[in-house]
Length: 191
Ligand code: GRF
Image 1 (spheres, rainbow, N blue to C red):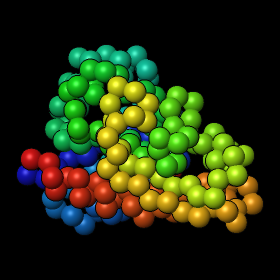
Image 2: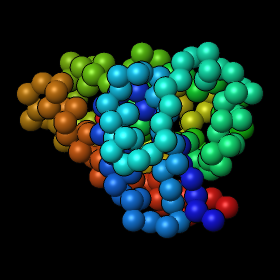
Image 3: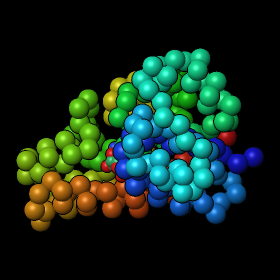
């Protein structure tokens, strides 16, 4: 039986695309579903291109345990991968998918994490603080923002960056390189 992943994303979906491409030729892992809360999210284009079922959901649907669980169970989802998903994962989902939800955060957590710290807010803060290094963190999801057990971190020197956009680009390169393989390693440990 292949392991089935649902990717949740709110934005452009460049991480989602890297993950899709990484597992494309694998028989043992399938990107089974893409969920987004934004009808104009770029990730929907990737879903179309790679023929992956996709759905736009709102906060109410996400909070509705019965509807969400029926939906995820009907797609036989083993692992949820958050890739730039901006809504807080409700407690019931954390409990039902305990240790089966991964997130990527574009800083070296616990620095520059928590509510409101996402996307360019992170890189603006890192740059404004004059940090010499930044990086990314892949962690399990618990009931709080950016707080679950850290699985993997990698840092990058940003001392020569000329602005937050440069920091973002350097961090995104790391995300693309490592997120798919960390997911892969983690999946091998799931039963
Ligand atoms: C990434 O930096 C990710 O770490 C953050 O949101 C960004 C998503 O980028 N949570 P993309 O949509 O994958 O291009």
